Image 1 (spheres, rainbow, N blue to C red):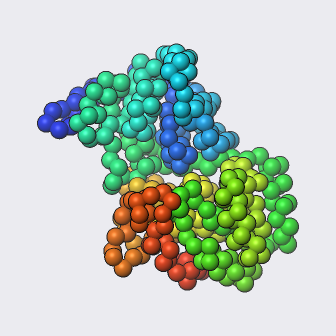
Image 2: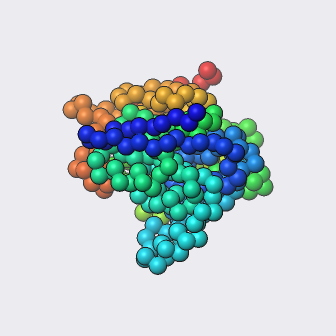
Image 3: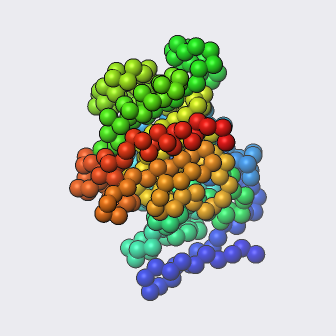
Length: 381
């Protein structure tokens, strides 16, 4: 017998029938119109559906500019990339093109856009709603829904809760972008490293200033890794500001700078060959954790329970991380910056509540703390 999902919003209840399996769906749309990290962390849900229904074609709808994180993903039949901003005529064409092409549509995000795409795409639609009263009418876009928790549930677990609604087993693997062997060999040839020399990949630049660790600290870490005999390789995106930032650190450290010259899939392939990866709270750090490479993640204002990198072998819906404190779980060592005021994590955009402001908890994070973590990750376990 199909269950009933009842969620309370304000003083009233919303009620919706849960998904009734019937025959396995043949075409599924996974709508994930948000940032690149959200797309990557939805891949366990895609894998869950593909494993449960191997004959189904799972398509993924994402924003333009985020589709690269799905390159080489064996679970995705087709990626549909739509612009973030468009006129009404273009949106109408998108919705018309999707109209009832799918048996099932799923949104792992509580966003109006993703729910609307699901509503157009399929007669059966699963998604998430925030607990605020104004969300109540949006339940009409969904056949079944679950309350979204933005505080105490990891983003991966949020998506996998929908697998539970579908009555299928959860697959816990975050799937990094994949690259062909020939392209990977071409990247490794650029390292010009002696045979057997271990590689350390450093990714110093997050998109927003409030997630940055100081350049001087990256330089200290890079020099320590070189003294240990590792080949230090810097990665980064193609934006001019990021290129200049990484180039300055790499030049002073004497490391190889590949920023701006690799695709996300090539970056993932490189990290997969590394002995150690160190990076801030950014999508590439999530990719590093997914490859299984020993990963050090530098966290400041962000909530680790929600956004900490998902360790490769983590197989529980419980978050790998607690709200406060540095710790290791599997192949990931999460280092949380500290502040005398005891405000970490504040879950704000820096100390001045702006994306271009700094965060004292990261600015004051000593390189020695990260080096000690690196020593742990480089030692046989």
